[in-house]
Image (cartoon, rainbow, N blue to C red):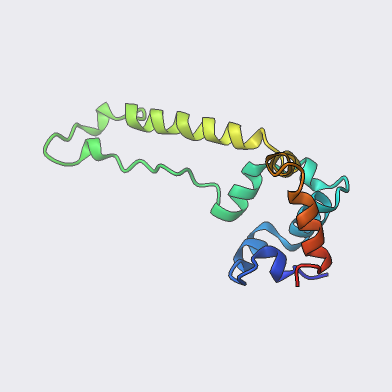
Length: 132
């Protein structure tokens, strides 16, 4: 069973998303979460989806500016990460923890609650073809 391009991206530009997430994972996520089946959506976290799309590299990459420029310090004074790199690493870790604490099923339930219970039913109808 192939990935439904309409499900990935109604405008047809999201094939990269499906490819990065993996066809089977995407099918389980979309079918299971939307159709109410117990599926990987319960165990798949938002962090895993973000990392599948964006990769696992941190958002901040230290370039050791403290060793360059007019106020450069010797490498011996740079044996541990600087205050900026430490602050950014702490922020990255907090962001990862927050995303890891939310499953795709949690996200779907919250979206449905925000829509007064209509979002998932709308998606079910759309998937069933009544959106045409």
